[in-house]
Image (tube, rainbow, N blue to C red):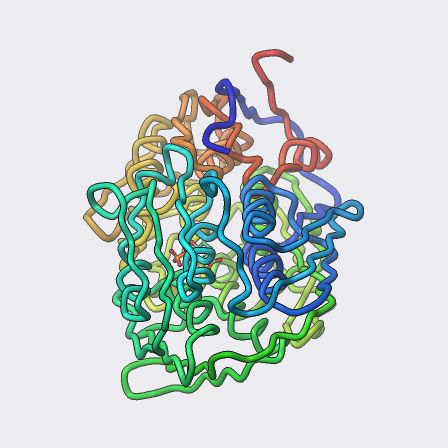
Length: 450
Ligand code: S3P
């Protein structure tokens, strides 16, 4: 989907406390991977709890275009009849990944070692994002890429006819790059190795093992090394997608800053490569408790209980924690505005190449809400005003970025005056039930058409 229709202005204003249970949707990262790996397995993979956000629906459509049979059986229930590693057919038309960097980069990896050609595009946000970080390592396998200036979409990938395995060190902390290399390595003979300086989310490795591939992960002198043995036969799986900690972040953070709130967010995966935000919030003094801690499918899971926390203090977020909370800095910067003192976020240059330049988007929007924000190329600092201290009364630009839109709506629920976003449409990419879920907790939102 190249655009999502007319802009949907939305306003959040302070009301009563947020109270109740927040059942957030399935994990976006795991949902994409379920469809892609299902399409690369031989036979039928069954998925429950799939996130039916636009990003994931675009990946489902793409997998069908590459020849897999992808069927929605019910609410979040999907079936994928895969074509096997190396079995992708050449798509008849352009693959439109909409807003999804994860979708396009993983799919490019998955097709790059098959003797087919595919052309990819996306919406204005995705067309502005760098693809060279993926096409550089894919070239080492023997694939060719032709795109617009700066390695931007639309871009055509000519898959390698006789792929060779690759030993690649990722130049930036990116699970998408790591995953693209591993997915390409599936159809190369021998061992493909990826080394990363800092551990990024490891869903691809875990899921590949579940599908029967041989994947090892080990610490090494310069970080973490992942080794994949190529050309496995992937066995179809039954996958229950856990709920998304990156979506849980929004009701959790809203509860922390809205007076009187008490919200339970059940069943959230606390994989250490994803849970950095919650550790950070607790260090800031948030009343955030893990209840009913358990293991499910080999992953730590808990129910998160978040209550209004009027005494939070700003901290320096340890830079080595960045990969485990990279998507959560926008909403953390909102919480930081309601804490006392400075919150310093360093080594976050990657935020500048997300769905939007998230440092700039948050800095501009928070300043408009009366909050002081300093920024450098790879860091930003929010000068907190304490509980109830944010003036608000501004309109923030969502910039085709779901997390920017949701962050400013959370801000408006606790600011002195309402906060609007110019377009809430992008929220549907990752959290289509955000609005009803938050209203169910007691949030006050207005739409122009209310
Ligand atoms: C993702 C990896 C991260 C993250 C994105 C999802 C994934 O991107 O920001 O939302 O599923 O692999 P990078 O790999 O660019 O850090």
